[in-house]
Amino acid sequence: MVEATTGLLTTLNTGSYANTGGTGERVLIDYKDAIMDYKVTDLPVMQFFADPMTTDTGGNIDITFAKPSMAMEQIDEGTTPAYQHTKLRSERVAVKEWGLAVGVTRRMIEDSRFNEVEMALNEARRAVDRHMTQHVVNVIFGIGSATFGTGISNVSIDESSAESAIVNFSNCPNGGFLGTSATFDGRLDDYANQGETILAAADSYNVDTVTGIGAISLTDISAAITRMSKHGFGATHLFISPAHYENLLKMADFTTVFSAAMSATPVTGGNVMPSAAGSGPLGNMLQTGGLVGQLYGLNVVVNPWVPQTRMGMFDLSVKPMAYVERRPLTVEEANPGFGIIGSYMSMRYGLKIVRPEAGQIIISAA
Image (cartoon, rainbow, N blue to C red; front, side, top):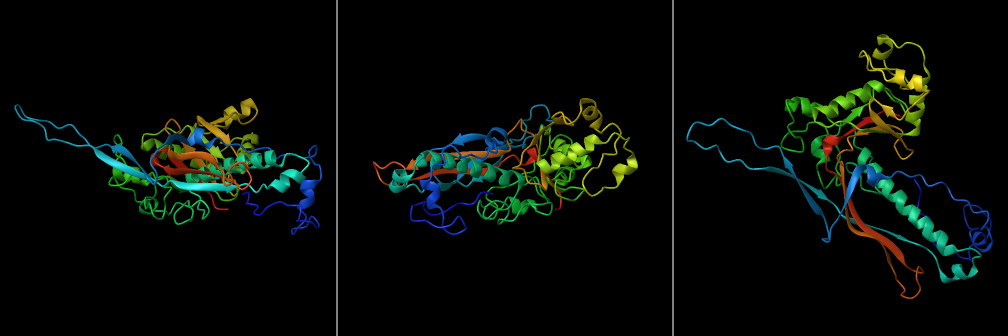
């Protein structure tokens, strides 16, 4: 993760290019033709996970959902059925302000031989993109962070996290998907012919049967699809890291016949086939020369923002996360008439998981 570089870049910072000093020369020497920018790592998180909402009211925002709460009853001739009412569930989204001050002074503009303001604003824009992406990724994958206030008391949500801890707003303001010991009194909703015991067991955070960075097991992916379907959701996307992608490609390189014995015992590295007949997707992969972008009907998204020890499976026909924007990114001009000099950018928004049944996180030990 990119760390903030504090302070101002001035001509007074002279010296070597060591860790201390030596920044002034970089401003005064013309590097315009030699400046190269890193390729921006893009993950359009809002497009995938949320429908942005705006509000004119400040502070925390409450979003209300209807729960299954009515049932037909048989009645006798001349009688009326009992009155029933809707059951509601509320999610409180914490709206906070985030800011970034761009350290550009009049002296820097005068002394620099290239457009210092343009460079600073471009990097500030990229910093905002990185911040939003990292924040959403932390919320979606349950990663704990003191910087973003994600997870449960800044600790990552895992297979042992109880539903009661996830819905505790003071300790877990961004929420998460379904934890263990979920009940119908909370966020768990009755669905079809599935009982509470079945639905509560289909929680969202589960340990991978294999260990290691980027470990991937097709058995765990198929099991996660089943758990999600019990809640009435059909998985549409699988988000994996480049490390997961490498192991997936290694599985596609095998041309030998997989046996049930090979799938029954997990192996280090993660190349495990499901034992159910006809559940192996590699036949189509091998025929087409590799990964074709779909696995078990899931659209596979490979991105370096995804944690190397977690995979995420989601039904993106609905948006699992709420993004509430109180105020978009604006520039607060501290010195009127001097533009960016002494000014800063800020925005107010909030994030929270509001569709807990629409996601499955598979966790592997490092």
